[in-house]
Image 1 (cartoon, helix red, strand yellow):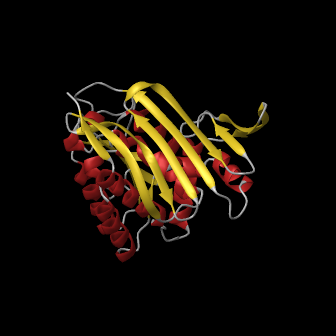
Image 2 (image 1 turned 45 degrees about the vertical axis):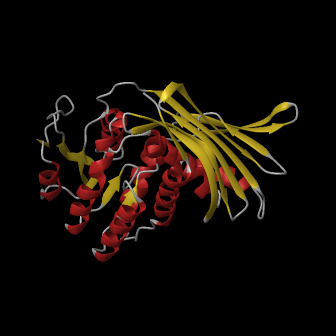
Length: 309
């Protein structure tokens, strides 16, 4: 498979370009506004992302552009019938995600949102441990410290903010464990220079699932997921960016009762799955992406906004 990689930031540079190659595929085009490419790269480097989409030496697109460009570039690729693996968020709003779902269906072309976490076996294992009909309480913390005013995550015009960048992971966990319909939400967002630097709150779903989450772009790097039912408690110490060797702790009143270990590269599994779906002409299921986008929209409507600075 010949890939165009659009956006040559850290995730593309350090993870996805090497992963695509290691999975046996070729990167033939890199779309980079700065004209940057890997050392020794013998493919084509273009500054115009739409030019990259239109090239004939491309079979599939991996899009890692700033959030505000995901919709337009993905739509262009789908209309040219080029399969797309797009970084989250797929769109800035649920309306944009719905439009892209329609475009994927109407052009009979695969579109996937790059929630790499869904391909890691620790999450499938955890879901298998929870029995039917269980009340589920989820607690998610995901933090990092980014104060660079020029970084796309700190700029409103590029779709920045903690909610879109990392809040989506908390919503993904709820969806993965069975949440489908949101009925109540309370919380707050701390806004600085037009973006939320922290979003914290609680969501309640009709399926008996409660999600507490706190995401911040102004704290030291940390992530953790805790999942509790009446019959069990599990801690995932590195839930979203696990190392190739990861662990899930099963807890009891005395502490860690059991450790379940996993060896996996979630990025390579994601690429393998994406390419397999292309070859088998499988249709995309974007229902999870649409639910997450809808819940994210609701957060902006229902949470209290506190403006600082």
